[in-house]
Length: 81
Image (tube, rainbow, N blue to C red; front, top):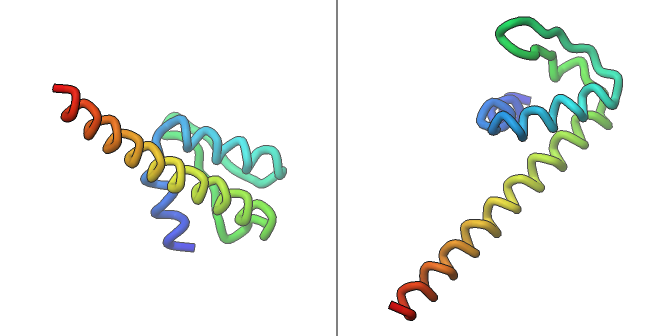
């Protein structure tokens, strides 16, 4: 769970909002105050944890694809110039 927590902590605001949507959609308990949204991963159902893990895996894979695409574009830019 600590790995999952650190992964969530490193997300962008938009990605964090998507995690919150998963939590809310699955009816998990959370609290909200001026500092943000708080939740206890240890109390979440296996289904919610799986959905969060799947979303984080999607983000990581997407980031790899974006990096690869940027590298390819840079190679083409170098060849053109």
